[in-house]
Image 1 (cartoon, helix red, strand yellow):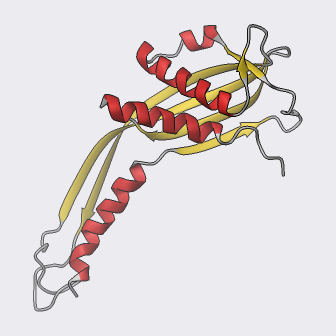
Image 2 (cartoon, one colour; image 1 turned 45 degrees about the horizontal axis):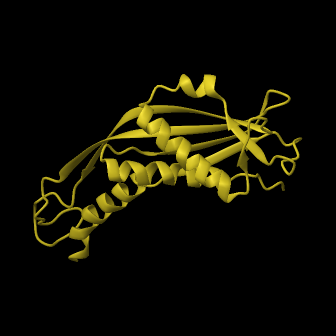
Length: 181
């Protein structure tokens, strides 16, 4: 019966862990053949409009460079693909209430019976959820051909921030080139 006492703590740990992952998604033009694309450059007018610090922009672009080079792409003055980014952020508040008993009668666990948590508990957590979009634009046609999106918790700590941005970019670009079904 003591396991019932641990359930609220276990649920909080699961919730905290689920907030700490980056989810990545992508969309693409199904008519495009992605194999000829070998070079890239950044779409400077779009990147200049992104409303984040210049330091975070540098982190994102550096992480993109690393991933693109790992995929065999090279930067070029005459690129096949233009890469643009944009971001969104919103404050999230999670409120969790849990009750392990009502405090009457005998016994342990859910429902009637004694519990050290008889009044339950409330857990409130606040965090910033960020979204990073990475767009690939055909440089000749000036049409978007692929878009990746990553969603996850943002950090203010510089060491965690570096690792988190790398994680965002890595998970997003792992979906490029798309696997046609």
